[in-house]
View (tube, rainbow, N blue to C red):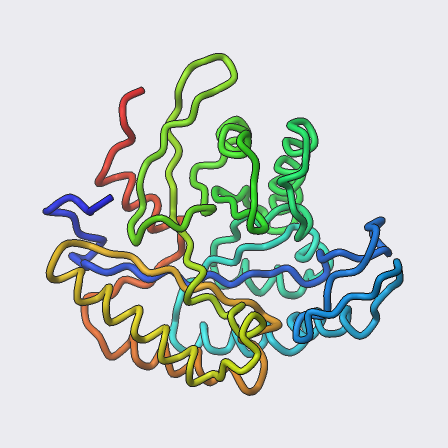
Length: 295
């Protein structure tokens, strides 16, 4: 959906950038937590055929908390950037120091489920409890109820309705545009309610490092800059745009990759008219300028 012709972000900006940092470490599959098996090894995509703890992979996840998070936080502080942390609630329960650091920065915490777990198989009441448990846990951990939701890849036909019922104001499980838009959700009683959709991006996500093992930090940086440049040009030529850049502590936080994130921030800060904000801030700015449809 194109931006209205006269639309601008705050301060007259035509371009909004959302930095999304996923926090999943400690909430992944593990027989310790009652799962049938472990999470595949990230960098190898290997998984045993019998239920067992994979201590090596657990440590690979913990790298994100112990070493990756400090690197990401240092860069965000250095560049004075406000980010959105899409957090699996259990991950922050188990990493209170990180939760405290995020809160101290004034950053937004968006709900990424209670666990970093698939919900597509859940029956409606199971999914409702999963969604509810996510926001109640994050509210207790951070002192603030999350306003947004991101699933682990897949969701159900009922998800968006359940999010409305549970009080979420925006949903990220969409890849259809480079600009926010309103969806109309049919409720259980037949009424309709609006839900703000804040599209996410998979193509520029740092998870590509796992999916394409030969991808280097220079490749990822070039793609991120190309994405930025195209949207930045369109913002002047056709109308306002927004860019979503998804990161993971245990991926971009590696020594051979963190420099690419720094180089991207260097590049962006050399441009004018770019508003870098949390997803919640972007959602509120959009909703103020483009009211929800009457339903």
